[in-house]
Image (cartoon, rainbow, N blue to C red; front, top):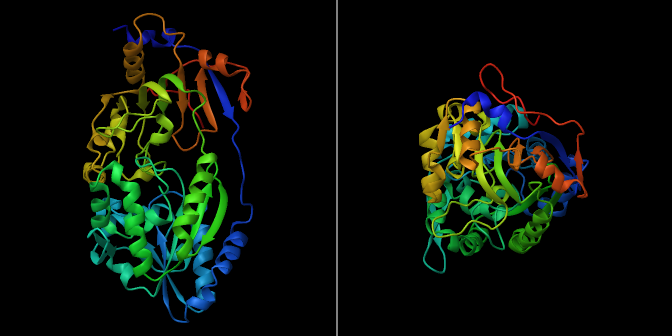
Length: 426
């Protein structure tokens, strides 16, 4: 291996890049929410004094506190009593205490939103599907007179179907609690799209669902669309919204990458820490990875504090830092991974004491001689891809591509006294 001091000489010059994606956006969140809630005609189905639960998951949805607060206020205005109900399956370690920590970190508190926050990990079977599958629901949800389901609709990191991440998954996996989540994921990748609909139909029939608020975000993680859906139309409308969401997804600037450097991974960016749709890696036994993007090596520098130690998905990386490993809550990570059944996603990549050591190893694994032609991309995480840094070879391929804006002056790899990479995306 070459001396680590030589790494700067071995790496290409890098250029900052701003990508332009479609950018539909809701400018007045509260106005849009109130309009959509009015369309649900809740005043006709919700009686004064009813206890109405508003579902809250573990994802960092943009404008979520404002969206929830507007819903809480609306429910109170029609004479009902609003509650914020934790619906996050096995996240938060599958414990009430862990759920509360996650919600607190998202600003979901009674003080902030004006409604009690209810956490729960106990489940009960409420019915069986036509194929004799038990349907689990949290005890906290069964104490309510009505439930307003709120979630973001987007591509899932593990399943592909008419429904993926959205309102129905919030019902099946979120309100299903630890038992519901474990049962759902235990059937394997191929069965999940069918099970979402099969179990979801039972829940929509048996629980007092008063409606849903579906959120679609653009490539900049801004609120692009807010849409109310009735219980009767929830499955069909979510199919349409999922297609729209996929049309707005961001992407890496190129499909051919030698080394992808991700500054942070974590549950606040994706359910798998790194979005499988972005990095092109599934790590699901028996299933091939997507053909594109083709990334030879993935290096992850840190685990976000907002992930609360859950490093589910780190097994999709090739290299990580010691700093990342020292932040891992193994119990939470393993529970999340065992629940999904995709155990390879919690495997330990090669780890290095410093970012400089990591990059030296990554470069050595890719070539023996000069590495000036390597195709390197640096991103902050797999959620925000509007700004990134690319090597000169990648830049040369993209110069005439519409929607790509490069800074003129190149930069070089450099490290601070603790051997941390100074070349970063803000």
